[in-house]
Length: 476
Image (tube, rainbow, N blue to C red; front, side, top):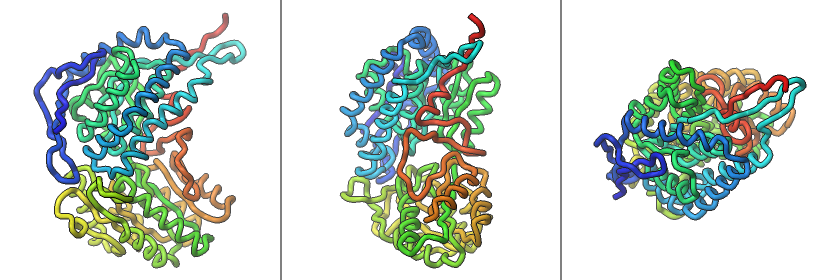
């Protein structure tokens, strides 16, 4: 059992001001794996005070000093990769192969990218009669989710440290173990006291206190659109900057010019991506748009992939898919699958209930719906599970119209054999990121959304901008 009883504030592990705790449940077994203490506004006040004091000196550190700190974090992180992966498997049920590569590896990748950018980042530039200075914004409130826990803190904290900001961090109460190991990494790397402060807690208490606190200059939040609205409301009276990466219902357009092999590769790749991380990714390509006359072909390909996925306990050998995070999430997914069936979508694979031979744990059957229309609930709402919907279109114009007919705009995908045609469609898709022909992840590319998928950008050089203020110095 892992019991987290301390927070990290002002360079010390300290006891919370209150006594509230919460059990942490292993989603693969439904049994408690430990507990986490839940903070309150007093704990946030202490952390903010420490961050403000530390900012006075940390904001004046040199590029060289901050580069040395990032490289020290990278080295300390590499030494604890196994511990981070183990924590992620325990807290969220990620299979060992996933937690040890994409999950733990993504955090390391963001720090490496930040160090690369910092080497030549232009904090000052002359512009005719004035000079521009880009200065650290101040104390940052970082509120991170459970689905990619170290990825999401790394893509926030790496640019914050690189630009000279200090932070108060609240990880999800559902994934506190990896946060604890990550904080130990920062301590081992020599992060100065008060520069990063960790307060565990829930959103309505600690998250709200961070968002509203007058001593915090910006908030970076990743989570649901519903929670993002509350963060923005809480932050509004203090006019602080709010950067948010929220929900998604990403369209994946498969064009009609793909031949049999190309079509199979595009459809199967889309379904495989839907099963990655048990479908719990905000940029998952959950709406696959296919030519109307190839609907049955696409459904057969996607169903074959779904039926071949091995759903199993996370430490099972091989490329297995684990559970979703919680009973609440499992129940929500089941309800949406049942709604899809009631609304007339064709169930091509999967369906409600656990996979065969699994009678406990929050496991979901990889599910494919065909003949979906874009007004159906399963095409409108973010399922956040391994559920793919197939929507037919007649021509490119209708495909783009359907793709953009959503309140979200985080990511989009398009696959086709004609580069010019693919490029034209990508230009018409209203999303912060368009992935073409199954391209690999690029940590230097900005990540963030249009519409209700958020505001601001993370990752790479664009991520630095969220942590900087611009000052014009005129004359001299």
